[in-house]
Length: 159
Image (tube, rainbow, N blue to C red; front, side, top):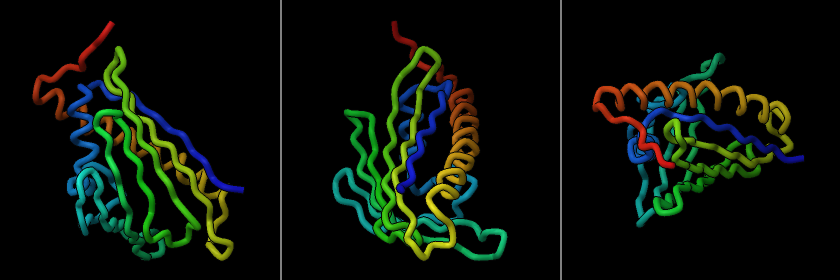
């Protein structure tokens, strides 16, 4: 059995602002509450390879891994995968953005499988990712909407 999650949120801000802020990898420690550091290892066109380091967990363990992200601004999508999967057999993430009447919808889809010797199974990780995605998305929404308000940038409504 593999894990699969889909989470989305609508951010009351213009698409360009949401896109720019959520794809500014170097700023992720200020956008997400879970990341302590980001180190960009390489860039090649629309592809970025980087190391993410989390804040210590409740046991004091610091988790870190290398991921690769490929952005497609024209299609409003991002594909990412863990290059160093750690306890995962694989972890693939797909971000999709869309303009809506209320702002910008951002959706994250994650497909993964835990290694047999991982400390948790696919079901536990699915629940954990769903719970954490909702927390992080709400935090991102609030931070992007704050910047939008400071800039006087209302979402572009179409239709």
